[in-house]
Image (cartoon, rainbow, N blue to C red; front, side, top):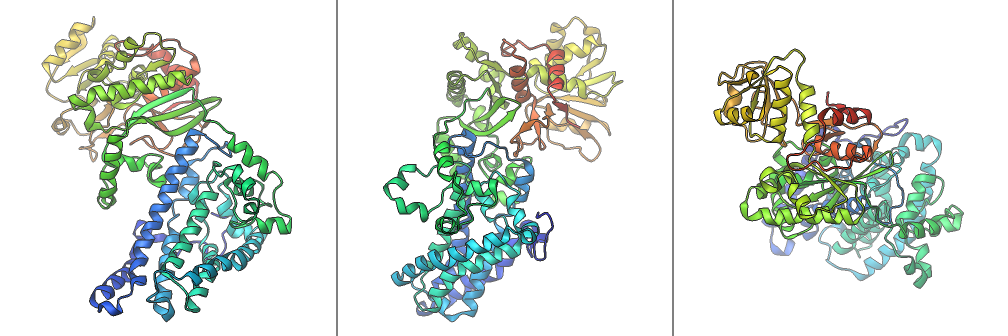
Length: 616
């Protein structure tokens, strides 16, 4: 929001939220109806193609978003080494409003201007005129409009909203107050309406011009440079006709330079060209991919989780993953396509970079889904992917790798021990976060609790929890006799171990594989504390209480956090991920794999010391 919002700042359909697209429904229905009920001779392709074109614009923008976020995560050729936070993602979540505005304008002009109907697919004269009208009136008028928007009165009321984003992303290009976006559309309408009214307009001319605008907007707001310097050496006049991401990045940091739209010629003419434009481009092009200190290795969960990656939908990635939503059904073609691609693609990919003090943090993702981890025939391939990731991290000088979710499965690799056994000379430390998981669960149990129910699949976290609780004199009840016998063999404090099927305990420690029907046997007011990798279904959320999976709130010094880790709230990190970071900060020299665990108390105190806090 601008510092002093002026009139017509908010978009008219702001209060409609995600239902704003219903505004287009009457136009879309009318376009399809009128096309299919009229004779072939009178059918209007122009009107029919408006809606598919709007959809193509959305896809075009999403491709740029994914491409940009992947490149900035790798840090290759990055321009500004600053962070993006949740407030910027929220501010830019309405990037599609300008597409909606374009659709409404197109439909209205088609209805009111008879020359805008039944346009031919191609008209060379119209395309040539569009080019000249853009280079002349549009670029010239935009330059002076843009300079006017930087005067205090207009800047504080309108344009400061756009400049709130110092580190730009492709979608930053269209984040403006409503009236400002309307003024830009009127500028861009000059070539389109000019050709239409002169009778030389075409479908290619209209849609191609808007596509050009989208392309240049997205390209210029990337926070990495990829326009080669040799291009301007081979074609020197090009530097006056095409801007670069580094050129426009300077406008967002210096504010009073580089005002041009896409053609810097007017900055050269009027003396507002930033003298460091060329040197910044060269410096950015010379930038190399950064090697992290810590890598968190996770994987895809559900088919819909692809949209919640930082590389997917920015606004969805900034919110916790909450299972299948209504809009996922409309995305099933894309979902199936993405599943096919991830199954074919045989390498991990980077999804996120963060910085904590001087520590560089990466999150890498194995292109496999939850269900694939349970297929016996997939286990060897998944283990190979994980091992390749560990060896790649080792080669890049990574200090610690934490294995998230099922990448540390007991049956898959014995909590990562398989890779240490195969590669005994590894310098990188591999951790599964089990010690911190135990510490978080222990500190989540209300003070004064005398008895807990331990339920779900037993693993080393469960055994450690039971051992520590029994040693503290807290009774641990188990509802399955086999589990009771297994823990009894591992503890010296079996007098506090109970075999009980009354389900009367008010605190349940829930692991993976818990029988969901058992939740309905819990007493009203029961507290469910998971020690599992995945959250249990909240079947009793109306009369019981649920904690999140073992996790901690990140310190404020952790930068570039603008996506959620699966189902966890904003700025909350899984215990495994936190352990990897703390392990590197403390400089510990041992793995946490197989049956071995770090000291629970030491890990907990170290986490608090470095600014991590329990989830409130």
